[in-house]
Image (cartoon, rainbow, N blue to C red; front, side, top):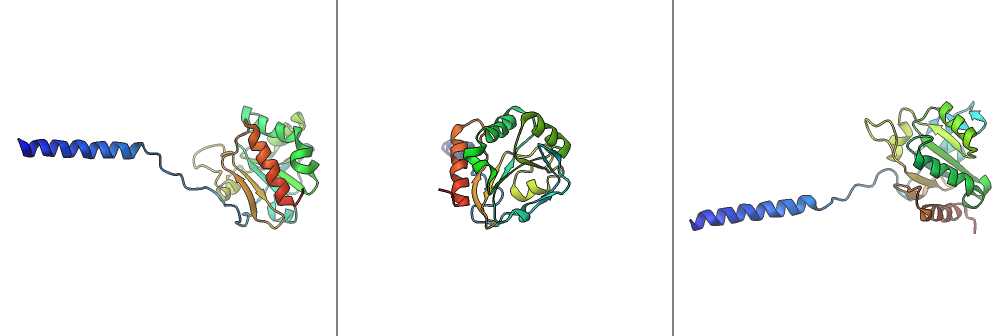
Length: 191
């Protein structure tokens, strides 16, 4: 009887320890490049307020500028609209009115979709169409089997290196924009 009670007690203790361990959240590995890494290059179809761009957007061709690479799930959705219209409304303060700073919103939307959205909402940034998830894979935004990419943000310095990340970027929190503005100023050397 004593041996049986010890076995039951050991099994209960093992179950308790296993359950407690299962409830401890495990740290998620960091996705995409980190601060200091070279920004992965990409070439994607582009769009602006003026329509679909004739030439694709290539990140490496923007070296020498500060570039904000903003992955977002889908045009015209609540969070994405809040993010892009806040960029528009704070364009002068966040992005120095676009002087020396390029903002690229990247989603799996077609370039015709983002061109129409940019025109309708008067969005001043460029949009890149990542329909196959190629850039999203390089930056950790792509999730296999999903038709949208995660909302991640990178600031690439003029040297082509990642200067700041927000993984995820929360478009509904004012501090996210304050932090972004600070990071852009620092990366671009503005005071």
